[in-house]
Image 1: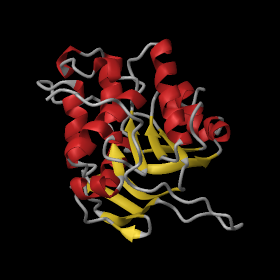
Image 2 (image 1 turned 180 degrees about the horizontal axis):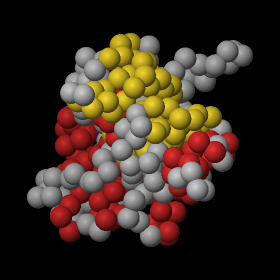
Image 3 (image 1 turned 30 degrees about the horizontal axis):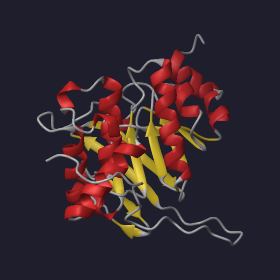
Length: 265
């Protein structure tokens, strides 16, 4: 397969959440309620409550082993919680598998890009467009091209995924998630390993996704990148929410400083 159609801007296959004109805040588009995750006697997450408003960008930070990726796995359906529930657009999706959540509007990228290395970038995104976004035939081709253009990857469309640079693979990882037409995009350590210039490019892409109305949950160790995008920040430590709120306030919280740097800080 190879791209044969003119590129067009990728349209949202699922409608963007309407703005709430009333004074009351819009209900969460995604929520984790009382999430516990245990592996035998090992407690990874304990009593986690997370909400995401339509169009919001939520950052999640914490030291290694805090349970961040496990939480993202539970939100995406890759893991089931030991206790608690996940709701999406007010519907309980706790028992839904990854594929059903994906087709319903929850997209996810992984910390380590996982492209089909024997396929081109275009073919990778086309698979996501068909299998996750439920686009068909020519519509899927046009959609895949539009997503590649949106992520700055149209010029790499016919290159094998195995030949892409780290930045290009991360852009492709995001493009594959976007090809499923998500209302919520889950990002896991997507800025790790990039240069400052590459990080700036990635941030510009994520900011545009926000402007398009996609709600984002972003786990990241590159804090300066995260703070340029998010509205609200959650810090996890030892499987619990340590602090939550306005990003600068959370990062200056003494408990957060200690969790990252130790009591001597």
